[in-house]
Amino acid sequence: MENGAVYSPTTEEDPGSATGPRSGLAAYFFLGRLPWLRRVLKGLQLLLSLLAFICEEVVSQCTLCGGLYFFEFVSCSAFLLSLLILIVYCTPVYDMVDTTKVKASDFYIALGTGFVFLLASIIFVSTHDRTSAEIAAIVFGFIASFMFLLDFLTMFIEKLRESRLRKPENTTRAEALTEPLNA
Image (cartoon, rainbow, N blue to C red; front, side, top):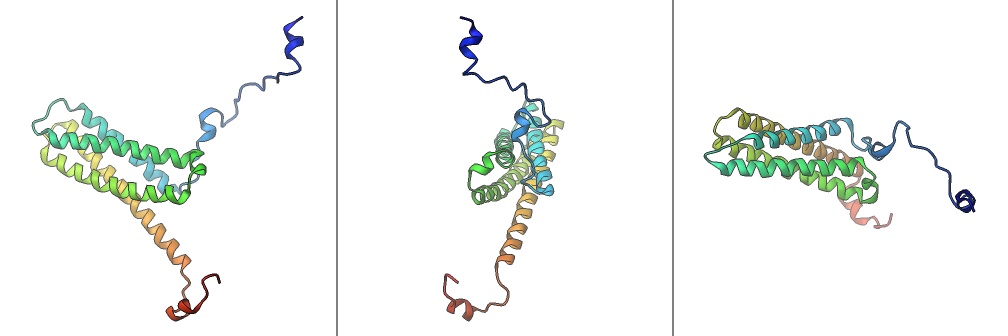
């Protein structure tokens, strides 16, 4: 018996390789969930925190190393957290989790990372040895912290706009207390 006779009724034909414009990993990556400004901010957060981390890693010696080590930890953490949030927003994972929790996590991660990155940059400024790699890391750290805080600010403004849209303007406190809850 030939192999073709045995396997032909049960096997499917090879559909061919997927060579379309969105094949492979690109088919799972979608940037449309974030507005244009937030996409740019997320990309800058990722890039600047990575550059700060790389510049800090180039430093070969230090006299007061506490600031350097704290900056190293914060810049690496900021890079990994921004990468994680970007992956969640741009992949099908976003559809599998509660979107309000993703947005809330992003809100608090941007706030916390921005403040801690700013603090780490300030501490590193006061303890660095004035090498060019350290100065570059500090500049990238400050700019990255401002990108995180600007991202937080844009999310905060979005939340304020959403809360104003949800509140009816013409209801008084007495009307709100006398209306039934299921109305």
